[in-house]
Amino acid sequence: MNVNEQPLKSPSESETITTLVVFPNDTNPMGRLHGGRLIQWMDDASAVCAQTHAEQIAVTVALDQVLFRSPANTGDIITIKARVTRAFNSSMEIFVQAWARRVLSKEKHLINEAYFTFVAIDGNGAPVAVPGVAPETAEEKTLYEDALLRKLSRSAAARKP
Ligand SMILES: CC(C)(COP(=O)(O)OP(=O)(O)OC[C@H]1O[C@@H](n2cnc3c(N)ncnc32)[C@H](O)[C@@H]1OP(=O)(O)O)[C@@H](O)C(=O)NCCC(=O)NCCS
Image: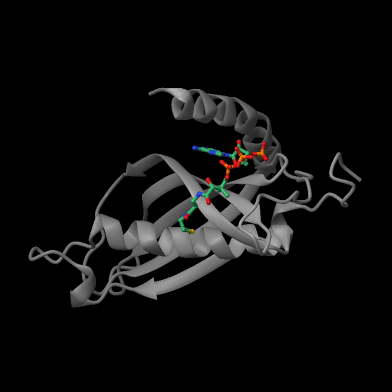
């Protein structure tokens, strides 16, 4: 049990993987995937992940360290993986990665990584407590440890006028 008196849950219990195809209406005139469209897909996957972990409705409250590492193009297959790194009281940090795969060459490359923060809310929109996270793998443990520093940094940024 954690401070919220709810059993801890592992990241694998809520890991969310989404697969999409880039169509022409997802791209700019050069045939490259719009950054905003990709962020929407990543937000959707992380919302499923957060709500599965929390077993509550959860809303996006912050998005940071967004890195567009390389482009995706019309026809590419996009895979998005969302994992909860750590939960605090009502908030959860979700680490999201996106890859593009070219159908003919089968080449697959990382196109984006970001950290989303979600807050679980009740029927009145007020924050509610969520289960804590029990990391299992070495990578999950590193993400868990570093999540506290990222939360403190976010809180400091939110306080700036
Ligand atoms: C999310 C929301 C309910 C939080 O309400 P609030 O009055 O700020 O609540 P609190 O100050 O008690 O903070 C609640 C949690 O949110 C976190 N939080 C608040 N602002 C944050 C920010 N800018 N960045 C990261 N976390 C934040 C707090 O750290 C706290 O986490 P904890 O409970 O795990 O310690 C409210 O800000 C809201 O409704 N925002 C709009 C969300 C939205 O519409 N999203 C888009 C659609 S999904």
